[in-house]
View 1 (cartoon, helix red, strand yellow):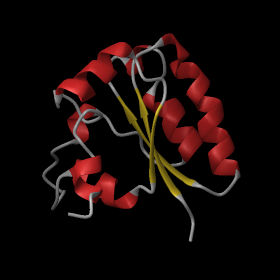
View 2 (cartoon, one colour):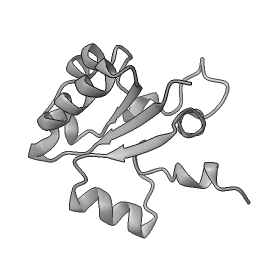
View 3 (cartoon, rainbow, N blue to C red):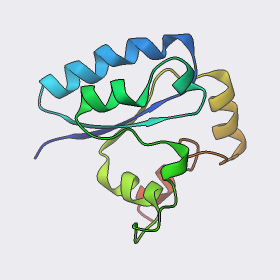
View 4 (tube, rainbow, N blue to C red):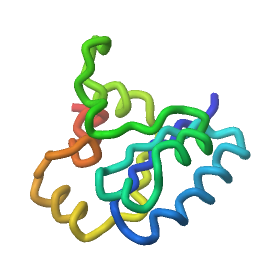
Length: 116
């Protein structure tokens, strides 16, 4: 079974460094999907991410699309074996801590996978 890694990129200057991580994971045969926050798009483009992981980058506007039968965050949570947040800015961490789900990245994925 091929591992599935979901990477969440928030808007820090270190966002450009995640490109190397994505490239390395893909070269190792790991399937990678990426969520970009609006702030992350100031540092790295969706086209760059799409090219590296060979799958379209997920943006906030992708959360609810008429062609989707189920919410995107649920599908991603069920698909992923691992969620990597890199870089994790203080802003995104505070949203996760406070339960402020105001973008695709901060919706609580881990609740979908809990065994209760």
